[in-house]
Image 1 (spheres, rainbow, N blue to C red):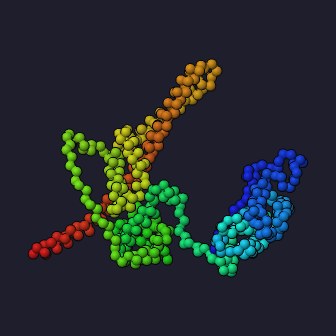
Image 2: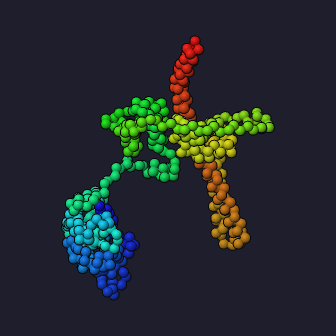
Image 3: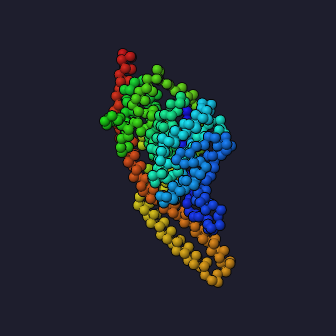
Length: 459
């Protein structure tokens, strides 16, 4: 079993510094430059006597280990490619106790000859760790003048060649794990922050449906009941829900959510898992004095829209085990932002879009006035003859203006957010109403059947 890796060697100052100023007085003009310091360091590390038993396990391919640095420099200078990446440093590490130093060095030499036939390479086998490992120092410029291109394809070729050589020598090889689909950066950041994404919501609903299904038909029925739609496009099964713009392939949700994986997960379930009943909490009774009419909601418009929508979101957030529409689960990520917008509306008592636009205009004018005052204070502070006491007063006033300006700009941004978000909330409420109306006929039929069976039992 051998692991591999390779990475570029660059100068310490990112190729900014040139040769040292006094080149005529340096002891060795060829190698006394800051540009090649990193290359010198990595070679000294790879050929360290303490790690290689007096350099017994050090070899060179297309170069001599004793003068490898000079030969690599000459190759770069010959083709005028002395800038950029100086060299590449790679390693090949073996499983402890599985390989001898001679075999490890022989494998490393063959690997270098196969991968880099036209490059100068130093191969050094280190014995200072429990796991024997090879180091490779590869000149970035080949003998043919071409620069080595390190990318995913070249690294995959290195890994495959290393595995093949290990098999030829009877060594074990690491099995490549099954890869999960790549995630978008926004999805990765949201999951890292503990927030829900629309993909995680779909996976959560699918897990719930799988847990309580014994066949694929039951799974599809459970998902359709939640509002999901399936579509077969070629060899790919796709899914979407009311509120989503496009379908998404099941395989993009992860290895456990393809059609084959779902079928296998259902087959492993001999009996459906039933969640244990939670003990009922004791009913608490309170005696409250006061006029209950004061608690009646008397505001309408935007404040009422945000209030009732936030109540739906908090109810969905406090009871995650229950089935809630997709649009509510998707907006749980924006719960904090919606709460801040609602507080803003109640602070200014805004109920219509026209009131928000008037406030937006007023805030813009106020910010412009503050900016003009700040400019006058800056100019006064720079004038000759301004006393220290006056400068102190100006500093205090500027600090107060800065705090006020921050709050005004924050409120100005909230105006824009409310104007945009209120339209989205209206649309989501429309979707929720349509879903509720579509469920009413089924509930009426269910209640009718229950009453019919009850009458038959009595009769």
